[in-house]
Length: 391
Ligand code: SF4
Image (cartoon, rainbow, N blue to C red; front, side):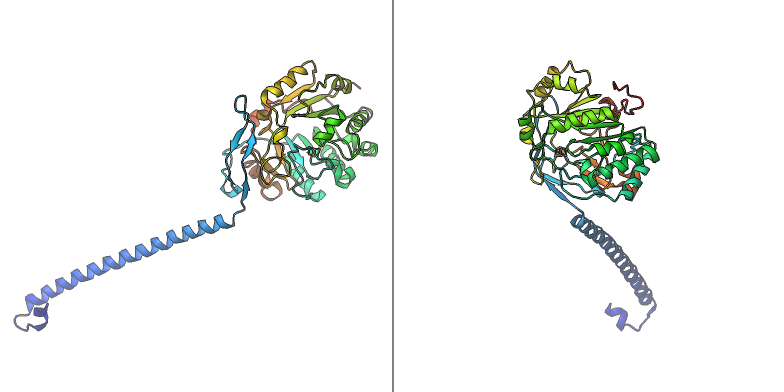
C-alpha cells in the first residue's frame, strides 16, 4: 500500500494494481451493504409478524373452562375435556364446505326462566332479548336460506312480555313467512287461555317439559315455581291444546331422580303426539364447570340406565328417544343474539350473529351435524295441517 502512495517512478503498474484493489473493495462493500439491507428488511418483517400475533392473542376474547364431564358413549360414560381455553371464533376452523340448509332451527331468544331445574343446559347467563324487529329480520334471513321449521325456546319463552313476544313471532313466522311448522318448548306454567285465543292459530306444536308425575320429584329437580303445581299446569295446557287445535308434545329429561319411574300410564292418558325422552346432558359453562350457573353432574345417568328407562316404556308408541350422542350436535341452536352455538367441544361456542355476518357464514361455526339430524328423526311430520290429531 505504501508503495502505491509513495512511488513516483514508473507509476503505471502501480496505478492498475491500485485500480484493481479499489474495484475489489467496492464490490466487497456493495455485497456487505446489500446483505445488511436484506437482513434489516427480513428482521423488520419477522418482528412485525411476531408483534401482530402477540397483540391479536392478547386482545382476542377468551374464556376459561374447567374440567367437565360429558357422556360420550356406551363404554366411556364420562370423558374428561381437558382444562384450557376455548378458541375465539377467529381462531376456530370453520367447517369446510358446509352446505347445509337450516331446515329446522331452535331460537332460544331468552335465557330467563321462572323455574330452577338443576340440570338446565341453557341458563340465565344474560337477560338480553333482541328487539322484536331485529328478531324478525333474523327469521326472515333463515327463511331465505331454506328454514321450514322454527322452534322457540328458552329459558321460558312465555316470560317475555307475558307471552306477547313469542306470540308475535309465531304470527310473523306462520303468516308473513308462511313457515310449515312453528313450535314452542315451554315449562307450561306461564301459558294462559288468553294467549291461545290470540295466538293459538299460528302454532303447530306446543311441547311442555315434564320429568316426573311425582310432585316431590319435580320439586327436587327444581321443575316448579313456589307452590305452583307443575302437573296442574301440564294438564291445563294439554286441555287448551285440545280446545285450540294445537298438537301437544311432552319432553322428558331422564336423570338420577326419575330414572326408576314408570310414566307409561299418565303419558298414555295425556296422549301427546310425541314424547321426546332425552338423556341428561352436561354442557361446559351451562351446567358443568366452574363458570356454570348449574352443576348437573349429580343428575347424569349412564347409558344403561337410560336404556332401562326406554325399555320400561317400550309400549308407549309416541316415545322418541334421544341419547347424548344423538342430541349433542344434531340441533341448530340460535342464542339470544342470534348466534349459532357449537356444542362439538362439550360447551357452547358461539358463532357471530346471523344479523352481522349472514346465515351462511354463521353456519360455518355452528358445529351442526346434518347427518345426525336426519338420523335422529329431526325431520318429521311437523305441521299440524299434516298431523292426524285425534281431536
Ligand atoms: S324450565 Fe327449562 S329453561 Fe327453565 S330452568 Fe328448567 S330446564 Fe331451564
